[in-house]
Each structure stands twice: as structure tokens, then as C-alpha cells.
Length: 272
Image (cartoon, rainbow, N blue to C red):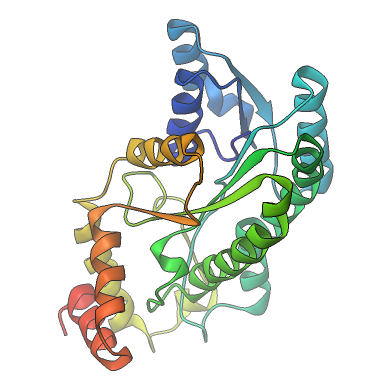
């Protein structure tokens, strides 16, 4: 079961799993966006079903899981991929906007896991893959809502790993860097941020730096390949990093003091 399968990481992961013999339920909020994956599945004779799932709605989650169980009686792999991003400083993003960000990026993951974990425990096997980001371990300016949702996801995943390990269920965090997807197109700007100049300078610098980094972004197929590699391993690691940029940032954080790393990030992000 893969969430957010209409494009990007979810799209490639659904195809990758199916090509590796997994009967895959590619879920998405708007099933009309599943035409491309349907065409490829038909052309390659892949075992893929497109199912409707709005991760923000509990009934939709329950219905999607029920559909899978009725058809296959089990779930071996869950990939929590659906998410979106919000730009704006802490001052400029309202609490309600923070809540909306967490609703999809964090609370939806809890809802889905609470439906799927009992099934996997009963099976005494399974893999729960949570798509985080290097933003789940490194803070950046002008995207605190997105980053804090990913930090929360990392903590949830680490705790859940301890809880489910005795039942033969693996919990794995995937931490991509910049990925070639349409992620930035639907990114929203905090409403207050549209009318304030206080953080305009730093916002422009960060966005410029991010766009430059995006030109050398990693193909989402690499994320899919990493997920498949992880679930095939006898003892999967707690987390997997994807992309040279992610490796670079995380290695730098490991080797530097907090102040040194702050200065390093400022230079990398906007040349200061």
C-alpha cells in the first residue's frame, strides 16, 4: 500500500514494487490522476490497483485498508509517502496553517498505521516505510511547519520501531534530499507571509538557493530502489539516506559543532 502515488516518489515506488512482484495498491486522493500509472501497468502487465485514499480523512483510510484486506487478506508493505510543504517563517504561518501541515504530514501517518499495524502484528511480519526527509533532521529557515512535521515523523518512527519489532514488523525511515518531483509546484505560502516584508530578503535567498539545488536533484527512482532494497534485506536498517546532497548535509552536521554547522548551512543555502 503506497500513499500519494499519483506522482513523484509514490508513483515510482508503486511501479518499482509491482515490477518486483509485489501486488501493489497505489493510492491517491484523486484517482483521475492515476491514468499514467494505469497505462504503464497495462503495458507491462504489472499487478497494480489504483485505489482512492484521502489521508486526511479517517473514513477514507478505513475504506482503503478494508478494500485491500478483502482482496488480499494481508498487507506486507506500507509506504507512507503522501505529504506537502508550506513556506513561511514561524511568525508568518498561523497555528491553523501549522495544524493543516501536520494533519497530512504527521497525523495521517498515525491514522494509517493504527489501521495497518494490527494486521501486520497478526501476520507477525511487515514493513512500514515512512518517507521523511533530511528536513527531518536538519532545520532550515522559511519552512518550519514542514520541517517540524518531518522531525515529528522521525520521532514517531523511532518509537514505533521499538514497539513493533517484537512482532516481526520493521519500521524504516527514508530520508531523501532534493528529489526531482513536482513537490515545489503545490507548495503553499503562509497567508500572512504574502503581506509582510520582514522576512522577504531571507525568503528570496533561500528560495533561490533551493532552486539551484533542485537542478541537481535526485531521481525519485532512487528512492523507490532504496525502499525495495530495504524491504528485501533480512535486517533492515532504521533509516536510509537518499541523494548525495542529503549525505553531504548529514555528514557535515555529524562532523561540525552546532555553530559551525549553522554557518555552513547559511553559506550553502544563500551564500553568507
